[in-house]
Image 1: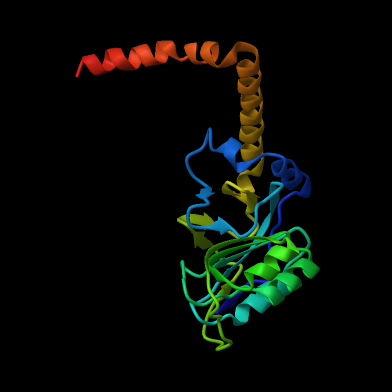
Image 2 (image 1 turned 90 degrees about the vertical axis):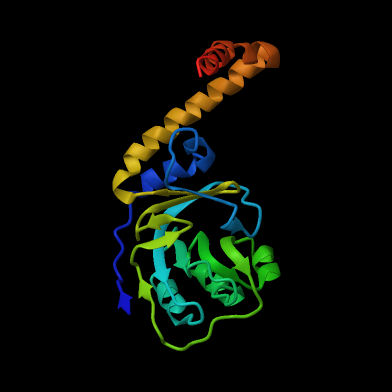
Length: 226
């Protein structure tokens, strides 16, 4: 059992700027660090994109003791990330953990396993992503677990202090040492998206699609050569 109390959190101003950019904008440019909502789903509709540093936890399927420890280390603006290796039976997160997280100032929880008390969490309007929902909960066995170590969610490695950006479409994991580079990518893609909107509005659908004719023609010509 490893418990690391200190987390190197990123510059709050950079986090705030990343919060203004949807993970979907990054999806135009990057191929990794994105977690789709196919497996890790938002429990409630995410009305506004959020961003915050990760505090991480890895626990065995049925022992939830260290959930309380990671909550003890939460600071305002944090995102709690719990890796249960896609567990489907034992829920480690519910009403009480949500209320504790909210009082500590957490802005979201990402659970690679089940949650419970979903109606209450929905009423509380707390941002929760989860792999499953279950009425069966973890117990306090003091078996194992690690706090603030690298974890894996849907194949994406998350280190403590990495920035989690979340929307209704899914999650982006920004490595804390590459935050400025990701911010530059995000701003560039936001501008490109805005230009596409403007072009569509000015040109209309038919003229907008004609811009792709050279690419389609090139593809058709290439296919003839095979």
